[in-house]
Length: 121
Length: 113
Image (tube, rainbow over all chains, first blue to last red; front, side):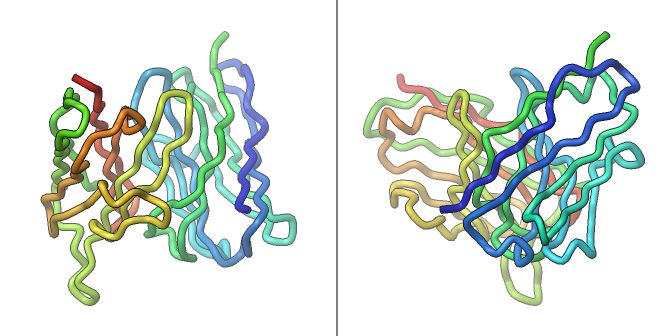
C-alpha cells in the first residue's frame, strides 16, 4: 500500500526557515517523480515544486523560486522541501504527491494528508 | 506559464443527473509526438487531499467509477459525471502537466440541488 506522510509544518515567523519531509512507502521511490502542492486556507491548489525520480531534474513555481529547494533521498525514501525567507502568503497546507512515472511532467496518483505551515508574527 | 481556466465556479445538480465541468488552457497541452494531451482531473472532498480521477485527458485512474469521464484535446477539456451521486460532492480541479510550472484551474464546486 502506497503511503505518503508529511511532517515538519508549524508556526514560523516571517523571514524564517522550515524544512518539510515526506516519508514514502509501498512503492519503488526512486522510479517516480514527486511533487509539493500547497493549498492556502479556503483557496485552490497551487503547484509548488517537482523533482524527477532520479533527482536530476527539479522545477519550481515562480512564487517560490530562489526561496524553496526541493530534494530527495532515494536511500531513505524521503522527499524534502527546504523553505527559506518565508512570507505570510506561504501559509498553506503542503501536500506531497507521487507521480505516476519518473518525469515531473505527469499526473500525481497518490497524495499525503498534508502538513500545515503558518507564517505569522 | 500556462493558465488553466475552469467553468463554472460552482454548479448544483440533482442526484442522478449529469454534471459537466469545463477547463480551458491558455496554450495547447497536446504533445504532437505522442498525440496525448497532458491534462489531469482531480477530486477534492472537504478535509481530504486531492484524488486523481483522469489523466491524459481521458484515461480513468484505476478504481474510479465509470460515471466519471474526461474528454477534449488541445486547449478545451471537459469532465463529465454522468449520474451524480451524493458522494461526488466535492471540488474538482484540472491540471496541465505539459510544461513547468505545472498549473491548476481554479476549481469547480459540485453540490446537490
